[in-house]
Length: 221
Image 1: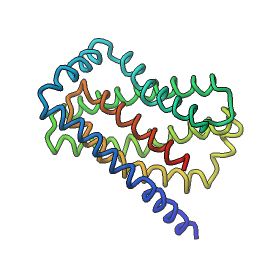
Image 2: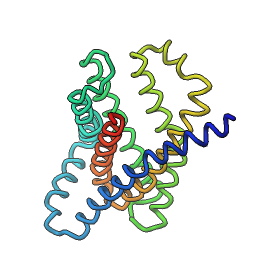
Image 3: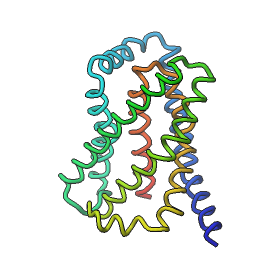
Image 4: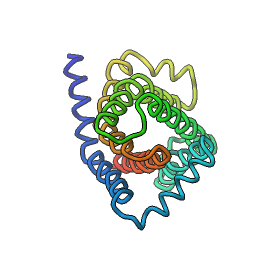
């Protein structure tokens, strides 16, 4: 019974993410194609790369807080889709959480570069994508984000969060999150890893923002 329920939950999550995931891949691929095949775009890309090189983790924190936190927060606030909590408290959560998460991803990308190099050959991209999605994402990124949002949903109460993180959460909710995450982010990070090192986080931020906004729009329906 539980196996069937888990299968149906994951199947529904995959179906829900299929179209948004496809749109997201087209969006990310379009940016990469513009970078490699539209010479006029190089000035803009070089300016962004320069910002990343000059400001390092500070750029990453601010940019990810903006694209993963502030922009989705504004959309959710305007559409009245935020939890019924203090707006200031929620804004601080979105900004700080995604800023820290962005720095974490940046450090992971740098570690990947140290391990596998920064060339965009098929072999390098496959290695980075496998490490990203089946180790980092499955064992840490997806679970940590899901738990933090569970904490948010329980009004930042650790006691309530511990109660909510029950057997059902770990045996059904979390596996469905991880699997549906793969559908979207395996192609997405494969595209991100084709870019030069200093442009990987900027592209990650755009993909992240687009994805969060699409999820928010779907949740409203």
